[in-house]
Length: 185
Image (cartoon, rainbow, N blue to C red; front, top):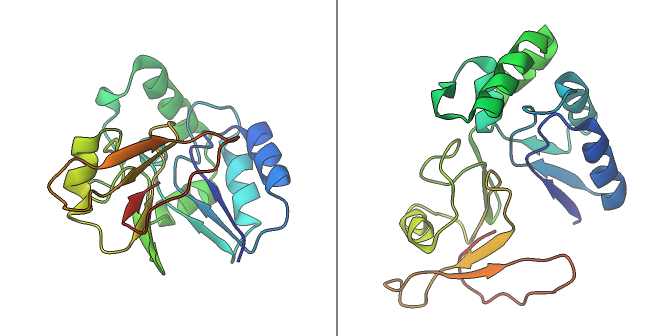
């Protein structure tokens, strides 16, 4: 099975179309949240994703919730807060309903899908070994895919589970062989 895994679209239709074109034919698309926010085309991005249904899994992210008024934006930086309010005023009723329907977390076979982390699926940044270790305790599947940070990484659980997890940073031109352990990707 070929799966396109995308995240943090942030209302950027041009980038979304380019990524999906580059992915080519896929069996499923998994979107790890933040469909809207920052960019100028929230409704168009939502429509592009909806065209991939029923072979689409799409999660809610913090910017999606902010645009719906479900998240206090006082912790956002000024630009993010302004973008959330701008987006909120431009969402169509259909787009609003779609964002409202998005789950915080999905378990799909061996994969847990979240925007932030298993501990706080919408908001927590999983960007340090200490945060990864705390979240491994909550992971019920071998693999967890996360968005939110905009940083490509792989954390894998330490063999004895007492040490800090190991981190690999990812790059498009380098293949990483992963151990048969639990992973945050």
